[in-house]
Image 1 (cartoon, rainbow, N blue to C red):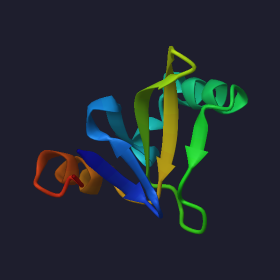
Image 2 (image 1 turned 135 degrees about the vertical axis):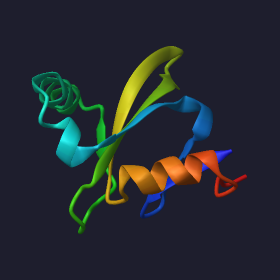
Image 3 (image 1 turned 90 degrees about the horizontal axis):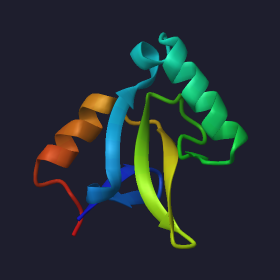
Image 4 (image 1 turned 45 degrees about the vertical axis):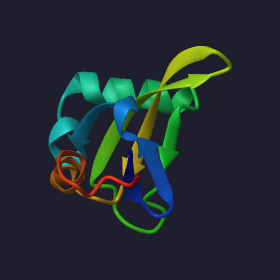
Length: 92
């Protein structure tokens, strides 16, 4: 099953570590540092091209036989994404 994050981006539901609200989470120093480090390391994928980012999603993915954390910036709210992930709105 896959979760649609916005635009043409979907991720496997089982790879999702967390879904976070951009406004409330970035108040924390830890969150800002994490996002800055992920961006510098090239692990951030922005799927909110023309819209304001409302949430970020951390996923564990396999790349070159290594597990890495990838961060997706989404124009959808964290509440919308959480509802989708907990309901029948996952894509098969």
